Amino acid sequence: MASRFGRLTLRRQVLVDRATGRHVMPGNAMLPPHGGIVITRGLQEMACLLPDTLPFATAARLLGWQTQEAAQEVLCASTLRTLVREHGAALAQAEQAAVRRLSAAVAAGAELRPRLVPAQTPRRRAGWPLALCAAVDQALAAEAPSPPTGVRVADWERVLAVRRQEQMDGETEIGTELRRLGPRVGPGEVVASADEVLTRRPQRRQFWELRTARVATAEGYRYVSGTGTAFLATLDLLCALCQRAPAGQPPRRVVLLVDGACWLRDFFQAVLAPRGAALLLDWYHLAHRCRQISTQVCRGKPTRLRFVRTTTALLWRGDVDGAIAVAEEQRATAKHLGPLDQWIHYLDARRLIIPCYRERQQQRQYIGSGQAEKANDLLVARRQKNQGMHWSEETSVALMRLRTLRLNGDWDRYWQQRQAPSLLAA
Image 1 (cartoon, rainbow, N blue to C red):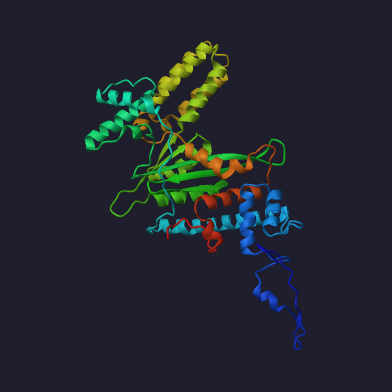
Image 2 (image 1 turned 135 degrees about the horizontal axis):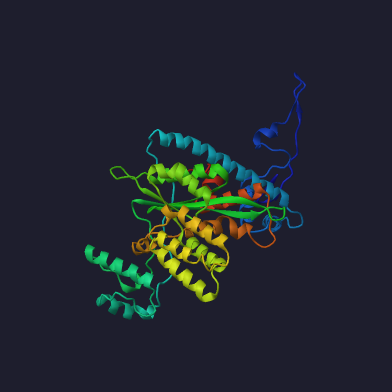
């Protein structure tokens, strides 16, 4: 038996029933199901926690030191890897069973509330140096339409919009807080963002596709991870649970922010669109794609900079037709027509999911899928995308699920209370 206090060898007692002649082991009734070594629940928890941030071999040595069996590893690296896979598979099976059960309950009209991590005040980067607050106050008092030197135009437009709203509501916000204005989730809104992240297979230039998402409301948030259609089913259910508002209030509106991947657009059209959700293309990916196209199409740096500046200014206002017209003007002098045609088709196919980013930023609404990118980093990249790493699918998915379990605040519920993580609030 292996525990947090080391290894303990138990003597087996085999008794013979004289009436039947059968061999009986009375001690087995006191032990959990096992085949050979018995590993206690506490040691299994440590065996799944340490590989979350450390290599399996290092985690095995640390377990040996913890149990004071440094001369002999209490559990080898292969056993740790097996435990991680087993608990990852158990979490996946429990989640799929819960999704099937709760989806039927939601379809039947049951009043259910999601289990969310309580929202915290986000840490935001300052919009301008503290020394400029005096100049900002003077510009606000004079209602200057242009920002003071050192303040971006986009930040200034958002500050003016907030100050006008404060005047209408009769409230006042101090200047230091205006520096840190950023997007927020409205009380009648559900902001969801999803993405995929690749982990390397043992084979050369082959990858596993893992999927992550973050669903947030004004009350809290929750991470979702998985693969294939099972991930989409969980994301659909969580959005449906968050969409339900308290009694007497209209349903919340789901806003899905994506990088334009086809599988996300198909999921939205099939599942979320019939429920009145909105799909928005992430601004960072759109602007990044524009800069990539400019290097393949434009001749010379001045032409490339002018193309990027003009196109992004039009797209910032949601003018897709104007951006396509600018692209058509490059056809006569383009280095390659293939990338230019791809860019025009890209904009035309995503016309309906390109909003007016300027207006959304002024209203302090999300314009990017940075939450999904951060989910990729927290759930997968920090552990599994270091140099030289490659993974089996079972281990890669299991590590991601265990990290999701911890970030959703369900770690103690699973290990101490021995309950599967629930999507429903208690």
